[in-house]
Length: 139
Image (cartoon, rainbow, N blue to C red):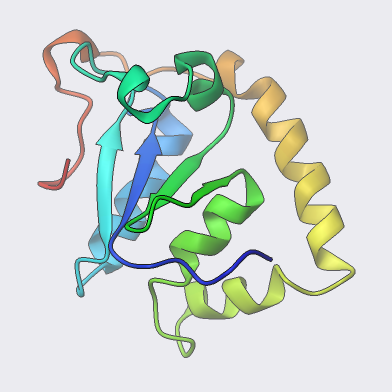
């Protein structure tokens, strides 16, 4: 796993994706220390060029950028998010488990499969163009 991220970290998620936004909502709800800054990449005002990452790359897999500018993608992005939570929590435990030699390759394989099918998952029924896909109060 990469170096421990510097907080706060920016989490880029697809607010139009039902699965993605539900997961991010769980993190937002548990983030009492406000270590996660959430950015919905499905809104028209999202500008991927300011991060030197293409929109298609953002849409393909989860991205996290820490306050020092380090980029985490896919399984490493989840690991970075889970570092925001105490080790005694479920997310803290997941952050430890994902680093284990047997679990990490399986997680990477599973995430690659999910990333490939994610675009076919149901989208939220309301129009995200007006920013209504955004969750919570952080953005």
